Image 1 (cartoon, rainbow, N blue to C red):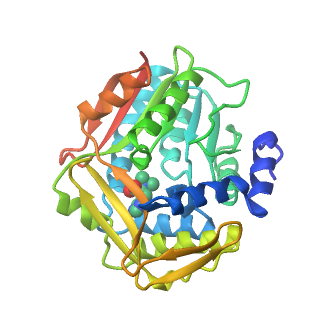
Image 2 (image 1 turned 180 degrees about the vertical axis):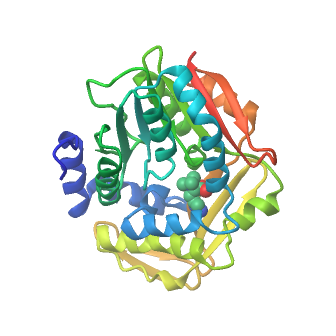
Length: 328
Ligand code: AVJ
């Protein structure tokens, strides 16, 4: 573990994930006991899953990442210098490629600064932190291993004003009540001059959205199936991913993509601590929702969480938006 990793969190989280994790087992048991079986999308992201996601972001059909990157390149130098941002706290940092755009903008203001990437994947986070320390010698990097769906406590002391960033449209992976709780935790962590920067995927022609989750190379299908390997590895279950098929479709009532794994046959899967879990032929496990937004739906989420929508930027095609919020 790097010396300045927040040990109180990372030590417990890393250790817990190596042994069968009681919290994970409880979540999986609850999800697979419901009439519509469901698994939390955070379990996509073991090392392999994070690699597959990186691959998705480079697919021709997957427009969000490159669109968001262009918006960041365009806006961050001005935003960061206008606000005098001194630290970047990033929720769900992944490989932190886009964070580099913000860090470069911070570096350009000559403030030096501090970077706090928060992610569930310890291995990805540590690789990322090492690379950033090498490339930004003046930057203090303090990675935090945490599940942002559960907790958000930035390390103390933190330089202000801080920019809390939640990029990639990941807010869309939370059901609205959970999204509001998450935004509320960000709001609670913020002090007055701090800002919240969020990326959101926008409502558009469903065919365009569906193509992004059904790529022609099958990377998204492999990413989806990988979750079953994560369960096998972490819980000792015996899922055969090849007996589950990838399905992704746009659900227009709730404005969201749903990803499912469909059992190709009637089968029972053994999950230690749960026993045998039955699947009918054609039965699905919902593995992800990805809610799509517009300005008014984001305003609703922000308002419910005590945040005020301060500014909004989207690309000319209206594919993706960056939103800045302040304490309401
Ligand atoms: C960027 C994590 C929000 O919902 O689009 C990509 C994850 N799932 N393809 C998204 C994802 C399937 C993604 N997030």
